Length: 285
Image (tube, rainbow, N blue to C red; front, side, top):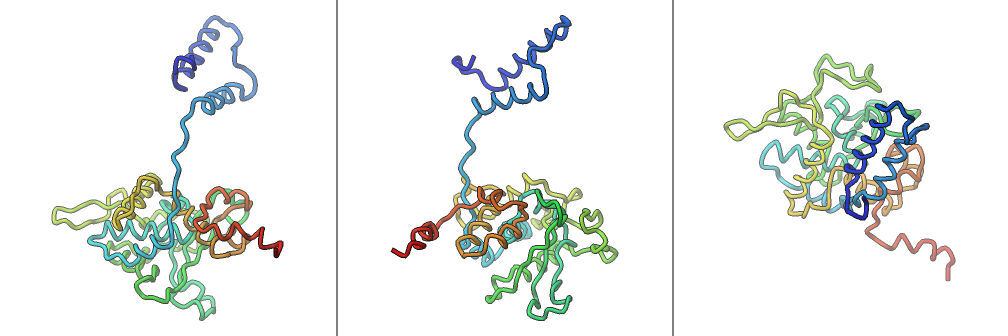
């Protein structure tokens, strides 16, 4: 069948039909045993599956260009902030899609008695994959030297634009590890009004796929060919930029929410080969 070009779905349907015939005839299944069927279908996937398209990482220049970009409407404003926030926070698309407005807290460290973090913010992820102990993560966004690059100010301005500030009766402190059902998403679905403006959709929670489309649309806004990009490229970009900047591994993996450092290495796409000379430099030749 493989020589004839049969697909995985075709082969799987044939196997299912054979198992059904055996069951109808009260004969033992030809594929039995613990996880035998699962292993067979996985094997078919490895043999016949298509290669995943190569993805590129979001770069620092893209983030800077988008932070400087003047959006024409609320939709463009949301898309650019979605990409920038997820990249700076090394977030997965599912994490960014689940973020609510009350997850973002301005001056959180300043309120704890640390004056050097005035005008900074904290974004809480409800639950990060492979994070067994912390039950979420508090990523930080510092104050930019250039006002036009200040993502904290722009996030607050966007929430004022679409009226998505946290509800006054929301007790976000008591919801650590749980999703708030009263506050709006940080990057909500938007619907276009007859006058050309945008308002929040009646079902505002975005899916990870919709978040990925926000990232792709944001790149098109600054003239980038988006064919090799998706939502996961934000996470790749955040980890890659931090790695090339020399951020220590133990801090980097804590920021990404990985339980083991090797789990994050597949996201890194080095754009500067200089770091690859570090081993050679160690010999001081």
